[in-house]
Each structure stands twice: as C-alpha cells, then as structure tokens.
Image 1 (cartoon, rainbow over the protein chains, first blue to last red):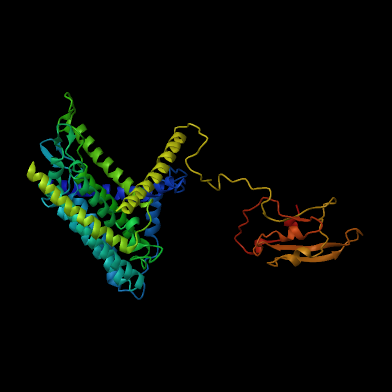
Image 2: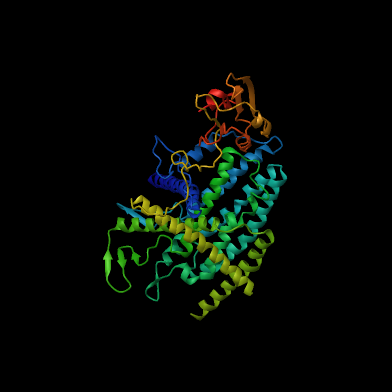
Length: 359
Length: 157
C-alpha cells in the first residue's frame, strides 16, 4: 500500500515539476530572455492586486486566456482526430518524465526512495521512443485539419523528425558503449567516477562529438527556430493552422516540455545528471586530498539543485539559440542531418570502439 | 571546406553577439535591482502610460484655433483650410462680422478628427495663423465616433 502511495506522490511531484518548469522556463524565461537579448523589457504587466514581480504571473495569465478561448473545430476537419491529435502529442512528451532521474536515493527512516518515478533498465530507449512517437500528434493534426498548409507542415515535421531521429540514436551509441547500460540511473552513477583522478567522468569529456551531434539533433527534435520548418510562420503556418484555444496551447506546452526533456536528457547523459563534481554519498572528497563531510539530506539537496541548475542552463542555451539563428532552408536542413550529423555520429562510434579496444 | 568553416565561425559569432547583449543588459538590470544608478540602462524601452516621450516642438498633434485679442478665434472663415484639406474633414460655416477688419467669422468650425490624416496642410494654408497643431495632445482615442468630431468650443484654446 505504502509503495503505491510513494509512487503516486512521485508521479505528482514529477508532473508538478515538469509543468512549473514548462510554464516558467518555456514561457516566462523565453519571453524575458528574448527581451533582454533585444534590449527590451518583456512582458511585465500581468499583476495580481497590483503586484507584478517582473511579470511572473504572465504564464498563469496566458494559461487562463487559452483555457477560456473558444474551442473551435473547423467544419471541414476530421473532428475526432483533430481533437485527439494535441492530446497524443502532449501525452507522449509528458510521459517521458517518468524515466528522468532527479537525484540519488533519499533515506527516510528504514526506507530508501529513489528520486525517479520509474527506474527502468531501458530508460533511455523509453525516452527516445516516446519522443519519436510524438510525431504522430503532428502528422495527425496536419492531416485531420484538412488544410493544405497544415498537411504540408505535418509532413515536413515527419520528414525532419525521422531524419534527425537517426542521428539522435546513433550519437548515443558511443555513450552506451562507454557506460554499458541503458538505465539512466546507472549511467548517472557511472558518471560519478573520476577520470585521471580529478576530472569527473561526465559524458561531455568522453564523448564531445557525441554531445554535439546529440544536441543539434535534439534541438531539431524540438522543432524550434533554426529547425522550425514544420511550423514556419512566414511560409506555411504549419501543422497547427486550424487549432485554437487550449488545443493550440497543448501544442505550445508540448514544445516547452520538449525543451525541458531534451535539457534533462542532455544533463543526464552528458553532464553527469545530478552529480556534483567530487560529491559522493557522505560529502565532498577533493581530488587534492582532504574532504568535507556533509549530512545525508544536504547531499541529496545539493544533487537535486545541481540537476535543476544544469537543466535550467540548457534551457537557457536553447532559448539563446532560438533567438539567434534564422530558419534553415529545407534542403540545408536535410543536408545537415543526413550528410553531416549522421556521418559524424558514425565516425564517433568507430572512434569510440577503437579507443575502447586499445585501452 | 574553407567556406564551411567560415560558415561555422559566423554561426559562433552570431551566438556571441546575442550572448553579449544578454549579459551586458542583465548586468545593468541587476545593477538597477540593487539600486545602483547607471547612465546606461538595460533596456531602451519607454514604459508608455507611466513614462512618456517628450513630444517634439514640430510634432503635428491635435489642432487648435488660436484666439485673438478679444478671445474670439482669429479665423476669418476664408475656407482655405477646408479647401486644401485632403481628407475633407473641416467644415466651416461663415457669418458676417460687424468688425470691418475681420468681415467674416466662423459661426461653425468643425474638424472630424476621425477623418483627419494629420498632414498639417491646414496650418500651412492659413493666412491668419489661426489654426495650429501644437497642443501636444496625441492620445485622442474615444469610445464613440461622434466624440471625435471637434467643434468650435473644443477647438478654441
């Protein structure tokens, strides 16, 4: 009974974390950061009783606005599929949070609780599979809208996601060879070891090419600006042309959640997840000798804080990239995916294999 | 190959530029939050209803009819402004003035601001310097179209 309760609480906490981060990182930080980049101020008018702390209520106001908008389904669309498409695309992103490790285990009394909703042994495959299943939402929305531009956007999305899926998967093969596991918690545990006695054994130091390929492919996977062919506002409005209100909001949420999932994945795989350099279960062990012992709860808190900080940093980086670059042309996009990223990831696999067989 | 490397360097330069803007602006925003006054600001935004930009002297804002020495408008109802007006928003009804120097005065002088395009031709055409656009009033929105029709009482000031 108590086990079920713990899993239930974990699911709720993970979803709340996910939603809060989506609202604040994908909405508020995106608006504010783009404003700061453009020498503007950004949305700062949303207020509750005249209090407006840097427009922090803006995401809530946006959500309320979208909830109360008219739920319009075009008469020429396939109504059922049109309705269900945003939910499909939302569901498959929201469910990935189950495999993300937020921290190591926490000890409460006799019980050890892992700070992860489900500790799969195929966690990595699960996240990748769910992210690629998200294409269905896009294709279905494009097709069910019965609008040429929507269909064009949906097909572009499908073509783009399929071609970048290959690079995304291949770039991780080298990583899986080094930390021989698909279990995310075990990958993070292996990253706690030290390289040459001082460098944390993070993925970025062992797989720099893998990281680059993965990060580019992952940004392409989120369908955001340098790769926003499916929803290019200036040429075709994209797969969500015929959507409005909360359904469109769900697509936006999916977008935001994808940023967070990708950041969490990059953090987990290449930047040591919840690992703080030189922090082990009982405190810091400095590489130059000496140690600083900390109580258990401080260690757990530090680890969770480190994970969140890394995720926030990668979200920041993605927003910076989004507000810097113009959109790829379609042939450039395909060239970039098939002629650069996939060969690079293959070279990375071969190189990793050679180095591993030598060592 | 060299072109590809150049292209790649340009990409890096792009992100350096936006990143520089971000960090420099954040630095000044942080100073402002900490209460340190700097000459440069983090953003160039003017937060409109609270802060307003000073309107230039030559700005063409809401019209006014300039009163003469006796408090009545200087206008002699010559109809030049109504003739030159491209949007035909000025309506004048002339009446005879007992003053021989004036001869005519406007019994009605109506400007429909809803039609006005603020070209300023009426000001240029006026031989008596009776109409000017120097009230510095630019917030002219109303809930009704009828409220945008300005008559002599509202124009004379």
